Amino acid sequence: MSERTGLAINTVRKAESAQNYMSVYRPNAQLLRQALEDEGVIFIDADELGAGARLRVPGEPQGSRRSKT
Image (cartoon, rainbow, N blue to C red; front, top):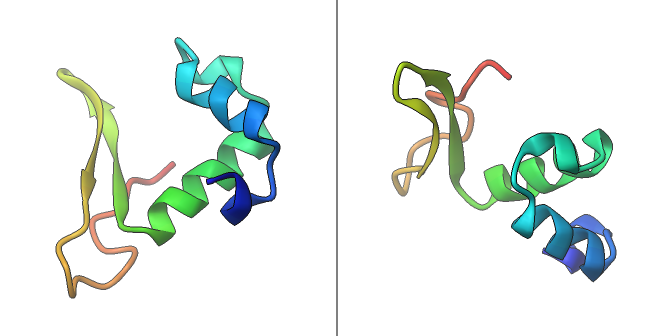
């Protein structure tokens, strides 16, 4: 992920171990999120069960069923 985003490995490790999204500098979080989305992760907005993520179905166009955040 460090190579893909251009972020330092320590920054990626901090994001991986963060207890909440507020622990990560917003532009860095956006880079990480975009890299994950490029690899097929779909982020799901929070509802009564909380936020989530899933993998895009192979062949499904990127951006379909994507969260609004």
